[in-house]
Image: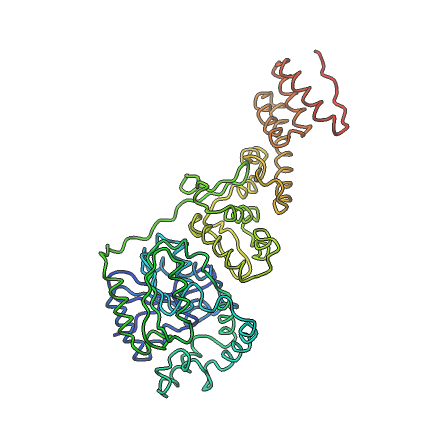
Length: 506
């Protein structure tokens, strides 16, 4: 078959290379540790596997950023970034819903994508993968050996000493032509420093906690003798996923095109074609999103407030609040770790927990969160934020109109909100006082009273607000109400040691 055209989707931080071929149900291949989709067509066994994919439906695969034909940027993307890139590729290719095929390291991305964007997934198929690809609780000896093993593996990458073929495709280990070809292929996938980074990230990645949120069917295919990812990882994931089918196969090869590929491809074909497939639908439209933090906390999707039951936990709501207060600036993951799980120093454990919560946040906000390995931020290009609208108000009347109340009134003790709360309160108070005074000067006492009362609602102890309410009531000849307002002013001033002038009987 002809090599498909290489195309590029624009992700949040660079271009992602992809190819697609075939017709019918959409299948998306989620990349493993490192690959090069353009050069993979240079080995006949891989081409034979690709041909089989194309006979199952429209198959799409891509290189994750930092590898293959995709942009090589400083630092490889984190797990949440990979989910964003995958969505960008599907959007660019016009794929609405698809079966996801995740091999090895790609299986964890596929599961997180399914938990985050269930409306884009028909099913998930994992080959030689799981919810983690390494033993979750290794011995102290294994933990100590891991850094040395990773550095040795990366140092030999792309050279005659590379152990990749022996470990990943033992059935092809005696084929010298394949060894020489694969050494060139390794060099085209990524450099050794990037590989080491990828290995370290793979070691830390664990999505077991999101398995309960994967509500689509999952097929797990695993060779019992796989020496790279133990079949125990698929068995464990099958027990955690709500709708899982595990098929154990004979063989030792980790790579799908090596060894007996027809057996697992037959299972894949039965899975994809066994049900009634509706025609590929259009891309789902992006909803309008709004986050409210002034006067209350709410997230509105197409004008509907997201009910508390859709958040899953208060942690997800807390993340959105913290990101909203940051106004689109990055919030470091370490800060979120300490905010949500204070005192827990196990970075892998809290990292996995944060991925679970971010998955919920992304599902609620339709992905309007940008994350990298160090920080997370709200995507203000995809979501409206009332705090930003307040910041952009140009005059006093606009400031008063944009102020829906104090910042996050249910989180008054949160230290991370205190500086912004004080800033918002001071700006509103000054603008409201000037606005009320301007109404009084223009002989509009009713309008002045409305604004002055807003000032008191925000801060019952604001003495300017009390004075302005009194002035507005006196200007309106509401003497009984003015007497009550004067008494309230006196009561507010007393604890501060401020003397209020007596009410003029006239």
